[in-house]
Every structure is written in structure tokens, then in C-alpha cells.
Length: 114
Image 1 (cartoon, rainbow, N blue to C red):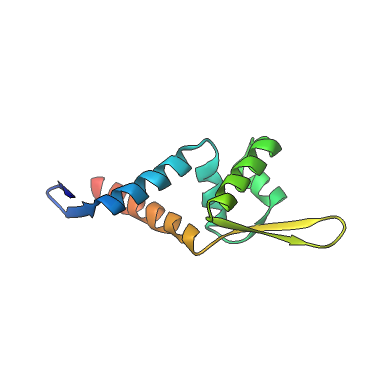
Image 2: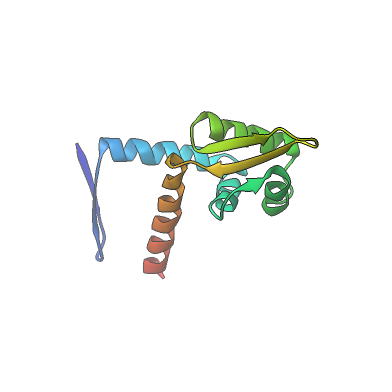
């Protein structure tokens, strides 16, 4: 089954699989703070403290939970260095690259609507 959304500018054709993937991504970025975390990681690898500063007033427990969820789903990797004090870095995986596409598509649509 295909859904066709059209506007005076473009036609988009999406299959069920595309819609399912978009729904998954929308659910993930719909969680409070997750989009801010992903946006920060789109710039590159970050440590926990860096993420906390860049995201803003996020509780460390919440940040940790969101990072665990993204790691469990395969969107980011956590690299732990064996040192004291512990050093942990987070970065998007290849699968996490889907967020670049989503952000780019949203920006493109937004620019066309202006």
C-alpha cells in the first residue's frame, strides 16, 4: 500500500515500511529531552557532562535513562574508558544517522513553507 501526499511543490510516495520507520523515529524523538540529546550528538562524540550542559536543565537520571534507551535501540554507542575517574563517551551509530536525515527533511520542508 502506498500513501501519496502532494502539495503544489512536491509529491511524496511512501510505502508501509517507510511509514513504520518514520513512526519509530517520531516516537523516539517525541520523548522529552531525546531530541535535544540527539541534536547535540549530531555534532559528534560527547561525554556525559558535555551532554548535560548542552541539553540544559535535564536531571542526570533522566539523561542516563534516555542514553540507555538510545543505546538499547542501537542508535548510539557508549564507550567506557578504564581509568579513574571513569570516562564515558557517547556517539551516534550508523543507524543513528537516520536522525540527520530526519532533521534535514524537517529543515527542508520548513524552508519551503516559508
